[in-house]
Image (cartoon, rainbow, N blue to C red; front, top):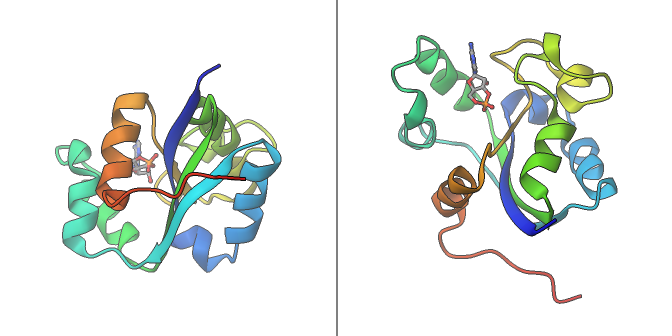
Length: 142
Ligand code: CMP
């Protein structure tokens, strides 16, 4: 499987529940490496821009409010098949559908507040990584 990069966000509910270490630990135990990370409080414009693809969806306004309600951790994960591996570890968008042992099954309260975000394909991963880490990531040298 090819080495990929994917964007991961620990959303405001994940940060509030003090799950940053728990979540990153799950990624690392699955062989993914963090090659960029930043804690930040998104502005309304940033949240609108990041989720522009959803702007016609009925949940868009609530999504922007939620994503700006507290700080988030944005990070780039790298590894073999990182995009699908991250999505497997996160579980389905709706925690009610998420497989047992996934982050969303274990910690998410609802489809709206679902703890984490992960890129869904290589094209979106490239756009999403550039959105937050346009200045570059920090590849591992050891
Ligand atoms: P995420 O994977 O970040 O992509 C879009 C986000 O919108 C999703 O996680 C949820 O936080 C939120 N959302 C709210 N309602 C829905 C819905 N009905 N379907 C998909 N995503 C939703």
